[in-house]
Amino acid sequence: MTHDTTSHLVSLLTHPDGTERRQAALRLGASGDPEAAAAIVARLDAEADSCVREDLTWATVQLIDAALPDVVAMLGSDEPDARRTGAHVLSKVGNPDHFEMLAPLVADAHADVAIKAYRAVANTGRPEAVAALATRLGDGDALQRDALTAAFVRCGEASVPVLIDALSDPDAGVRAHAAETLGDLGETAASAADALAARAGDPDVTVRVAATSALGQLGEASAAHLSRLSASADATIAAIASRFTR
Image (cartoon, rainbow, N blue to C red; front, top):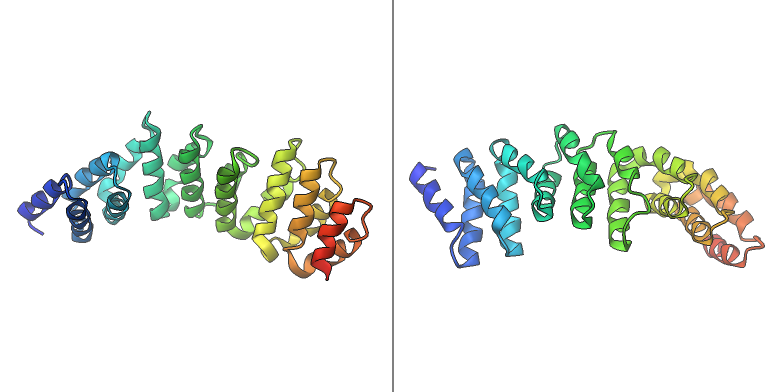
C-alpha cells in the first residue's frame, strides 16, 4: 500500500458515514502498514459507534507491534473508557508478555475496566493470572462476578487450587463466588469435591447453597458427597443434593 493510499484511508477514519469509517479501518488493518497504527488507535479512542470501534479494534490488533506504545498509554490513562479500550485490544492479542501491564487493571475501581482486564489477563495464559483474578472474588454486581468467573474458566485447571483456597476465606461472599466458579469449571474441578462438600456445612446459607450446587456439576467425583447430603438435616441442601442424585 502506498503512502498516499494510507493517508487517504486515514482521512476516511473521520468520515461522517460509519460505513466509510468501517471500510477504512478494515483496509488499513489488512494493509499491515505500521504507519497507520497511530491514527487507528487515536480514532479508536474517539469513536462512538460500537461497530466501527470493533473494526478499529481488529485493525489495531493486526498492527499491534506498531500500535503497542499507544495502546499501553491508554492503559495508564485517567479516563476509564481509554483504559477499558486498551484492555479490550490486548485481550484480543493474548500475548503472555502483556501480563504485567494488564494485571494492575484487574484492581480498577471502574467495573467496565476491570471486566475487560479479567479477560485480557486470562488470555495472556500466564500462570500468575489466576492469583491476580482471585483478588476480585466476591466483588461487584452479578455482571462483574460472572465476568470474573468466565476468566477463571478460561484459565481452566490452573484456577482450581486458587479457588479451593478461596473456599476458606473469611468473607462469605468470596467463599460463595469461589464455589460457584468451581461449579462452572465442571469436571475440570473434580479435585475440589472434598473442599466443596465441607462448605456444604458452611455457617452462611449462600455458601452452603453454592457449594452444594457446585458439587452437582463435578460429575462422578462428587457422587458420594451428594448422596450423603441428600439426607442432610438442612432441607434446602438436601433438596439441592437430591436433585443431582436422581
